[in-house]
Length: 225
Image (cartoon, rainbow, N blue to C red; front, top):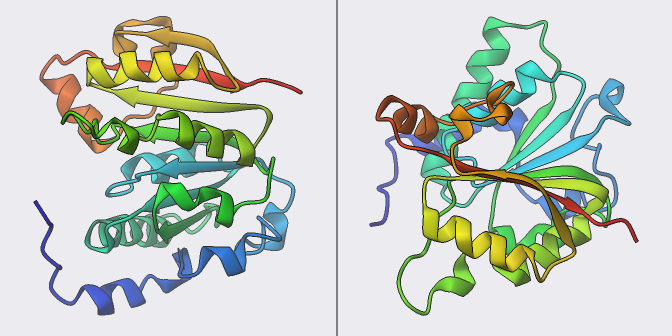
């Protein structure tokens, strides 16, 4: 179901324009640090694909001020909330570094946005499982997407996946087996595992946790050449 355009969304997005990159290929393709203050140059660069309302990436940026973060969402009426969340966070805590930028776009274009080997990590949190027969190539862990992620990740860079969907998780493990990635760890119950320490939850994840839903998670590392 298509999400309705939010009232005054264009004006609301404009009020948060300092955190939004309108044409990523023009801004980041040659210099991944260009959108950030000079003091962030040289920091590790991370990307969340499908950031939703921005809770995860805003909390990551606050918890790890030494890094810079990009967050991508294809639906402008959704990224609006992420932009407003970040603006409110910065206004309430002006001591935080200016280390997050948002983009409206499709994950298939990731190689057009970032130089090869420029990212230290990519986060895929609760991506659409595309359960219908014949739609598997749309899954964000399909091998064609994994090849794109491998291109923009540095050697040793990490791909982190969280999902409540067991079918998608099994599919992801199978696809990773035919990719330039090695699975460093995996769990079928993130919140009950040794990997829960330091885990930052998304909005979806908080709801699942409250309902006792187990979260599948993994970390895959791009193999060094």
